[in-house]
Image (cartoon, rainbow, N blue to C red; front, side, top):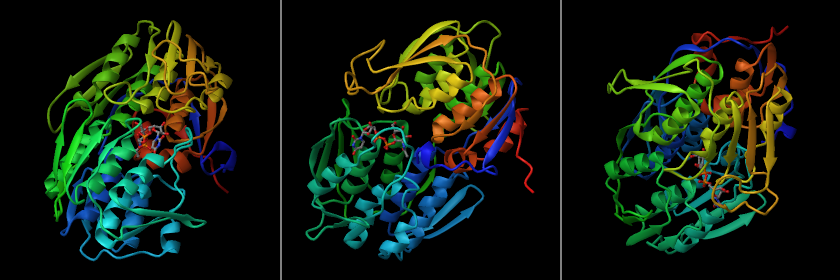
Length: 453
Ligand code: UD1
């Protein structure tokens, strides 16, 4: 959704009295970017699956709805999700279309549904408005596997009249979703699949762990090569989702920007190494407690001026693109010129216009600044930002444009002097952040909902 089609609703608004350091503790649960995919994987099993550490976020509700219309029995008990796919059935276009535009996950149902039912239907996709977000890699790979893809006004219809067979395939770019598409399709395709230039994000490795528990044979080689040997049958799994490293980094950046101190229970050092290096380079302090149950990472502002840095986002193990926005907010408080070169999405700086209105000094450029030339250079995409700090941020009325940018607006409003109104919190933030209001209140943030008549 773009900010333009998001009508500001006064009840979908949070009032933030800024200027208070965030102090205390939050817990992060399973990663949104794994949980939704592991739910899709459950479709492939001949027996029920159990997924633990499932966050209460809207993307989980959307995938629950999609699984249910296909006959999967889904029950949530606390943060444990039970999924029974033994009665999977075809769903009607209308039932599926109820979920159109709410998330990009439906595209990942293609392979599992083609295996289980011989056909699949994909509605118009949603997700955050941060670039073109095409699905050409997905559809191309599915065609190579043997799927017949037909588009009409209602969406995309797929069938596999001759079944699906293994492929040798090289991705143009290590796309997370396309890698997951190939994995979820190849595990039960006839023969072996070799995927080159694959994405290897921790959430993908965790999905591979899920599929391996189900009976899949998947080898992750060096140099982004993944080999999958198709099997005839997969069973259900029991799995605890890896923690959400995007949410963890969001709280870390909030601690830095508000000059506070936050212990993020559940944050895991191994998945956040690149972020931790950046956090330290900026001048932030952290301490890792690696107790397997109670552990996490405490992040705090040490009281000394923050330092400017030149950064660029990249696929894993590079700096994650979803960490970009919270880091930029923190960099508005650094002492000097910082550069952020966004190489994954062409249009992920839209949120900076709101930060500028709050007093941040940020200029956007279409050149590839401060790093290696990327796909977006010389094409008029404003994908590099120069941030001059430190800026005193002041309160403003803000309209959230997408999920990750939205959390950055919250951070900026909490760091700013005065009272801000942030619109679109229910529409966007709840897609990916569990109980964010309670967590903010627990950290001492001065927030309130407008009084409704
Ligand atoms: C996932 C994450 C998102 C994260 C992103 C990159 C989920 C639910 N979302 O999104 O939080 O920001 O990875 O780490 O897991 N592309 C194509 N054609 C395609 C597919 C992708 O050109 O068919 C391009 C995209 O436009 C983008 C780049 O590849 O420029 C990366 O996208 P991709 O890794 O696929 O992102 P998602 O899987 O959608």
